[in-house]
Image 1 (tube, rainbow, N blue to C red):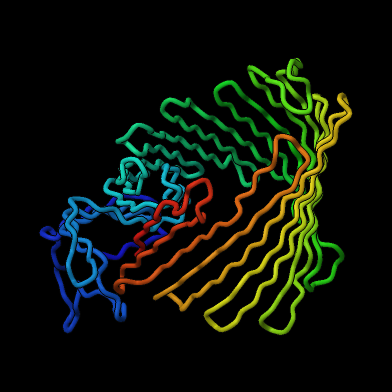
Image 2 (image 1 turned 180 degrees about the vertical axis):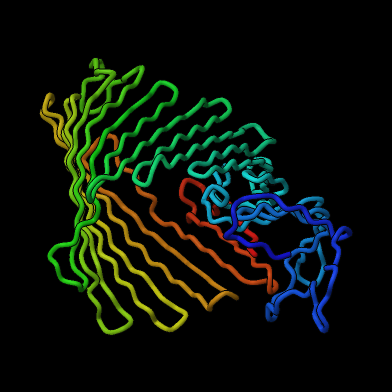
Length: 418
């Protein structure tokens, strides 16, 4: 069945047994003929379809075509083609590594079940619902539904007008509590204002910030440096504030700490070396002062080299250095820390049939802070996507941590795509 995706949302139910031909059929015409779609094969077959124009098609007694010409039977299957992000974005607790099957829909909602891998229960099952309006959407999900730890998520996204939006998220984890966050953003001339707030057991915080959009230097039409600026004011509150270095062990620290910060970001143009190699960099400087009292200056310098080796193979090499210092004037102490990171990625993309991406990162850190500094020494991430049939693709992803803290392989990600 073909539907007009540009039409206003409405429902149309079609039953194959109830379709009748026109009263008058022109000679040599084929009133039920479909347009030629080349060599595309069916992705799914069904005996009945309910189309919500501009949103989705719900198929009854569906059979999903799998490799080898076999099929998997489902009593209901929903195929979504809507452009509204409320249909495609998911907040289910699987980190995007799941197999979703949507089975229910109305004119403004869809419901689905998600299968994923869980280290405890092995196979995890979750449910989610999407409720989509003209300028807003709501996402509700729970996963895994079986096992000792369950996560229930709620997301509300509202586009107030063409330049303002607000988002509320809530996540409840069994035996851990509820974590809430709110973000209100309003764009003004070449910048935006942002109000954020978050709360969790024994802690809450809020920040009001102004940030400019990326602004280029000069008026040249060719590639040129750009920058943005940010300033913010906010607070952090903890119900019980324990002492930490460099303060004495019996020090009484304030439960509420107010801070103000200023940040500047500078990005370089892309320097091209021939047609296949380019180099670009960035620098970020952030200065923050709070009422603890505490002062921190953080810098971030990154350089990236991009090379296209062939039509299908490209690489990215990047080096990042992040020096920062923490000053505690009340106890006359300054700590210096440096984080280092080197990353390399190799990407192979032969069009739609096959794609492979490998991403490796090495990190290290030095500090004179007695609390230490964390750095994951080595990590490797891989993603492979290939087409099983003309209408079905499979994507696999996994991470490897080289035995750090006894961990080697991360969770296996599996996605089935049309």
